[in-house]
Length: 179
Image (cartoon, rainbow, N blue to C red; front, side, top):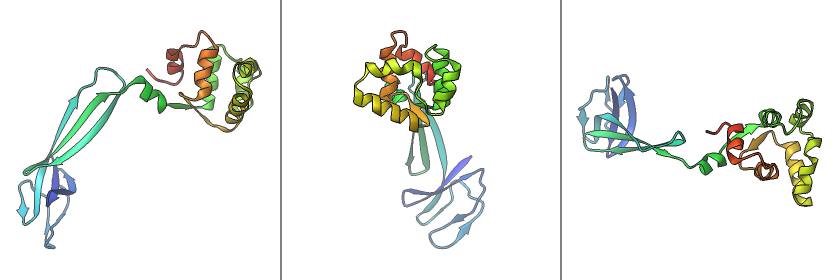
């Protein structure tokens, strides 16, 4: 059983299985913590955990809120859906995994992928550079040479998807381990 030491409406400390020592406001100590104990502004109450699952997909997030009530602490975990766009924003893989993905998609060959993983621009993607502006091409090559991780929503990745007709957003999601 989880317990909480509360004082004046705030959680001071939590305890598992009545193990621990409670230091009271007046300097006294109580051990072990026991639900229902009360001394002045100090109380020991049960922590009640509730999970509310509102999700309908595998892409979820969990938010936890604790509310101190008179005789308990109510800990509510709410599971909600996250949009694919939110997941994409926070997803990245290391450059080596990205290069392996480029091999599996047939975009570059293995020997070129080894060089690309070291930061060298893949020669077979030189035509991609003509697809974007000169300033963008410089920025993409510098970023490629210096970054160790590739973000799913990186301009390079998004542009790569539109440069190659057969690379859909879903294929890119799979490459980045989403879905």
